[in-house]
Image (cartoon, rainbow, N blue to C red; front, side):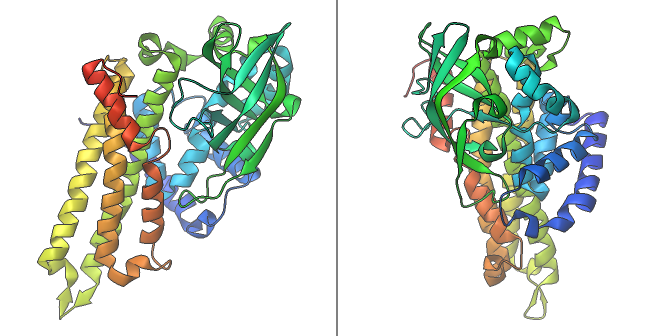
Length: 390
């Protein structure tokens, strides 16, 4: 599909900004996890451009969200993760009074960092049956459990926590702020996305107001004339967690497209410049074969991702299937594309003096979060057959 003129202008302007303001800081900026102050600064700066949660826009529009994820990840995937995983921040100022007082000022000035706490040590991709529990006690919920591999965990002001409501025996979302609950975290190191803070979260008799259930906060948003994202067709046609994952998985596919774009550009430039045997290696047939493979991975992944974004935007019945198909396919293609680009560079591809080793580490990380490739295959299988494979 073709981007609209408005989307194309947004894409071009965002790319220019990232090239001029963010790219010069790399690769140094990616060598260790961003601090909270650094993420806030980036979030506020990009928010002024209409990018990310701090802008109050973007996530509700799947195509804007997709383009943003693609362009940010072409330059720095870690920054995209840190910014985009802050999307639950918008719900903070509509929670119970105690949490609202702790978060409202931060949400409004763009300094609130948020995270989504879903994955558990025992459960992995089994998000339907959380071991984290929420027990009703008067006008509060008492939350106990542990989450892991949570992006932004160690710097978050608030978390959107998936837990089993023991009163209704159903899975639900709870807004938990750091200031009034004091939940604890531990940082995790990882192969790629080195600039993105990742950690475990520990909830030990954490108390939150009963109004901190997500759908209660959403109701307050709507009553106050806010909450554009919940008006989006995807949230009208699917369960909340499925709708959120459809957005997130389309965004993950777009991240992979961004990495593939960077690999394509670097491999092509290097092939034209590197001379062996009296001419550029771009004239060697096997190098052209590698370039062909990277280009094919890039364009097919982009078309599939944009198609998924269009379906999510319309709340189409196939949006969940296609977002998982795009996530599974594009993330695997980014690994292959980065590997092929590294092969074009030869030994230099292994050197930290060139960007390919970082691209490869980031690409390899893409196949795990928000559901592994294998989980995406099972989701697509279920959507096709209506028979669960797990």
